[in-house]
Image (cartoon, rainbow, N blue to C red; front, side, top):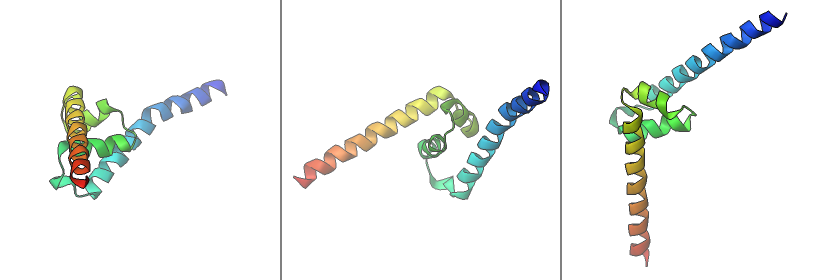
Amino acid sequence: MASEKSTQESAQEVWLPIIGRALALLCLQARRVKDETLADKARLLESLGLPRKDVADMLGTSYGSISELLSQAKKRKKGRRKRASKKAR
């Protein structure tokens, strides 16, 4: 009985992440992401709960590249907010 349960748990440990990545890939394809940047795609995949390493693998790039892209996108977004608030004054 115990070995049956551990076999089922180990099968879930293997298959659940694979199913999750497959669903995330389907979400990317359904959004018509051809016009989106790599940072937009990475942000979407991370918002779906994928670890950054898996995001990088799915997008065919490195972990460091994804981290840098997201960091730059965040800085640009912050800069736009500051400029918008100055214009409102």
